Each structure stands twice: as C-alpha cells, then as structure tokens.
Length: 169
Image 1 (cartoon, rainbow, N blue to C red):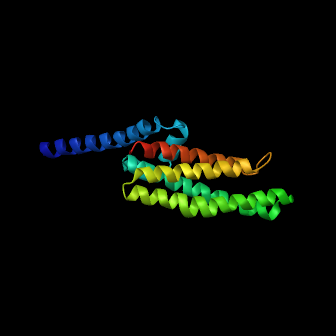
Image 2: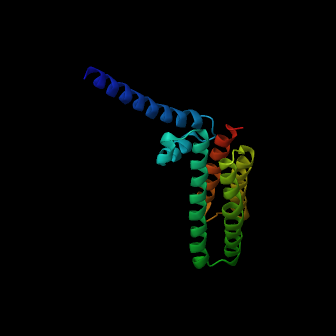
Image 3: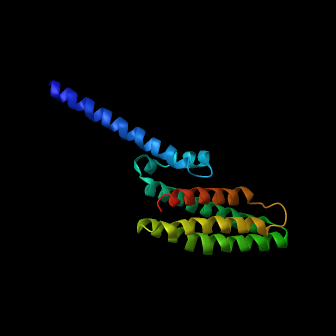
C-alpha cells in the first residue's frame, strides 16, 4: 500500500516536471526570437507545443504562418470584390499571387518538408521567404495598405519561425 502511494507521488511529480519543462522550453525558445510575446502567445495557443521539442515548436509556428497566410488570401479576395480603385485592385491581385503561388504553394510546404526531413537550413529559408513575400506585398501599396495588419502578422510570425528554426542548425 505504501509503495503504491509512493509510486503515485513519484509519477505525479514527474508529470508536473514534464509540464513545467515544456513551458520552460517555450519560454527559453521564445527568448531567442525577435518577438518574445508573439512567440509565447502563438505557441501556447496550440496544444502540440506542450509536448514538443524545438523542431516541434518550429513546425507549430510554420503551421501558424500557413493559417495566417490563408486568412490573408481570403481577406484579399473580399477586398477585390469591394475595392473601387483600379490601382488598389491591381496591387491586391499581385499580393494574392504572392500569397497563393509563393507563400502557400512554395515557401510553407518547403519549410514543412525540410523540418520533417531534418533539414533546418531549407526550413529557415522557407520562413524567411514567407516574410519577404509579406513585406513585398506591403511595399507594393503606395500609401495605406488595406491588409497591413495581415502582412505584418505573416511577416512577424515568419521571422519568429525563422529564429526558432535557426536554433536547430
């Protein structure tokens, strides 16, 4: 009986330690990124982070870039239907191509595949390319962009992902 109680205590403490260790890994990892708060908030929003290693955290972040890029592409589609200015429409179309063809069909899939196959250099390049595409979209507007917050989110998430991936090199 006493050995059973002892065993339960040891298992309970071990599980608590594992939980604290994963939270510590998120914090420790995020301290090495350009945006600690965004990193912690993003990783804690995904349950996979609670039991992930650094490569797993990188994959979670790349998945978040993908989700935000899809949301950006949807927002662009909405704006294309309502934008009265032909120049704005043309710029939105350019941004749609960047997100659809470059980010979602090339950068993110290559980063995911590189992480899965243990090739962090290519994963880092994919994340950096996604940031560059978002920044390029933002610069294409001569003045106020109707999707600034979306572009900034994709760029910021991509830079955080790149920093996490760099830890794997």
